[in-house]
Length: 548
Image 1 (cartoon, rainbow, N blue to C red):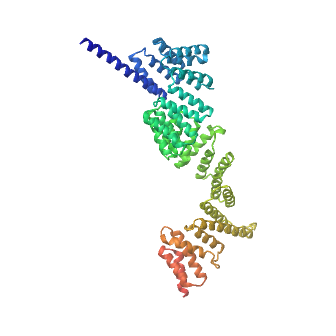
Image 2 (tube, rainbow, N blue to C red):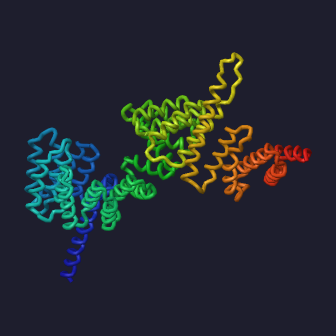
Image 3 (cartoon, rainbow, N blue to C red):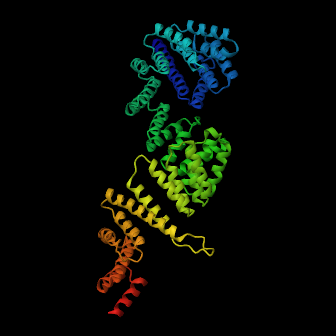
């Protein structure tokens, strides 16, 4: 019976050690994931049970170290050494604290850590990581301790991770990849190796392989939260914003202490989840009221959600806070579109030009400038800008030809005879210019016909332009184009009521000029079938029937 009791007590102690080790491992894992609050809670719980738990004391030291509270970190590291002089990691922690104030003592701490690391090379790797993470990095020292760790333990996975990071810094992509794969081989649970290997695939532009590495990490440990953040960044960089949002959501739900949510907010924005992005930005601005980056995105959202008045105030605040060298082309572009939307096209044009000055390749700004000139009824300037836009655009589309054709047509219409009591207006010069613009428009609409032969737009607008050229309809220039457009439009006369009305009116008048009363009445009646109250058609039929 006594032997059974001893066995039972021994097993409880053994199992208790396993549970404790698991808890300690969980705490260290949380530190690696930057989930500092969760790590602190685990270590604090362990220290309540055993105030001399050297691992937990080290964990608390690490928590305070990464929180920037060096005095508290030093106390915990020292307490850890006092509790157990054989646990090497606390000597590493003390060495990190002493490095800046007392380099000689720091070196002594690291030597003590090496001496205590006979059974665990991990503490030696921790020294290497410390040197690697210094600013500037001390690569020579880091390599020295990595080599020492591998000599002691040739299968030490973290040592190969450090080797991979250093090779990556040198630009040795292939060797870095080899080191990370070695780390995974020796310990598939070393999550950092997957993330680092993924970054190599990104640099090699092998996007799918980069995603695969991170998914492998998640398969090994679904609660390794940094993997989700990395996956979110990958999807963000590849404009897969829906997937980016999903992974960021998992990460920040589980690591709320990480305030680096800018890409998350941008992902929400690009995924058109404006409400969610707005709510996130409001919270962040409450904590960081002078963060210009937050105002930038909030301004963009205001434009997209048509909250223009408030959006202008937000963008004004942004431009006040942002350093001039941090202002982006999109900042000027969004502000310009916002100003144009509220009717301030003069200032909108100023901002579009600032965007162009910052990056002359952003030729779409010319298109926006042309639109603003058109709204101001400065048609000649709009036309010049649109023409320049098409000259610079690398891939001109049918839509571009169509829009420029409309610009020529609109500008030509604006050049009609204007009353001028001082007789300073040169009507003849305007008339010549007007015809030349109509001809240019017709040429552009002919390109629309060529590149989009099944669309009604090309022939319809050629009809409209030629009708303007042949104002009296004596030549019937518009007739073949209108008739061609009508073949498509009559298939859905209700949808295209306005266009069909225009064509029937033209053909009715054309046959009237040609003194073909029967044909003329036929088209006016077709128009009445579409629009029974059309005054022009009713008047025309009444007049024509009286002449019979």
